[in-house]
Length: 321
Picture (cartoon, helix red, strand yellow):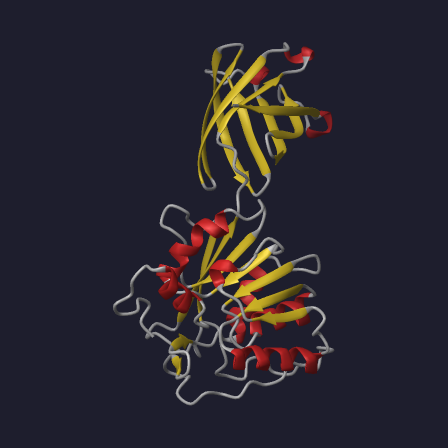
């Protein structure tokens, strides 16, 4: 399978066809029964030629390739999937990512797929495994689907589709994790974490490696934030101006109009952290802030003047408009 489809035009209808092409579908028996596992996953009938090339569905004319079992599990591990998570797999193929997330990681979730035969196969597997109440599969349009329920999104989509999908994913709730196999978002939204793994049974490509990438949707924090220091710390008025490009932040700050250095400014989902330091690194005014963003407010704990964390104080900032 070539990552760019010939004569690809960025129209909504074409994007839908490609986006809903199952890039994680059936081809190999993907999860061997384990004596240590209480549940075994039904084997998937291999598709002839899948070991060395992508498979094209003759009815839908859409390409899909299997995601080997070790890649599925590593993706879920990378995203930190657990019992509290709801996973949505976009282009779910034979359902292997959702089924594994539910059966082995204790999550709930559903897959989105265009091919009704693969939907049926996924549903049948979920019933056989006794997890149909927690693993569902839907025939839906990618761009019309509601992802708001997800705490984790898994994707294996072509580059052009990933680019079209980026704004929709970036608008998800802060803290939502997105894990992708091989293909990245828009160039200016780099992954928070990436790893490369050897996959000897990878069905496409000459290089038997996969790249897995993880993003955490950041809270939107760009703008001017205002808050008051405690009286014990001089009671100064802090104004913090933040510029944001996805998870990359830069900032400038003043205390009572006097510039101070901003270091360690970062956003991880809803959690924002930064340190205010005066020029010259005067430790008496070193303030470390750690808070959760909620709309136009951020609140949390602050450690002033190099005090130990046990002496942390509460702080709250308001965004100015």
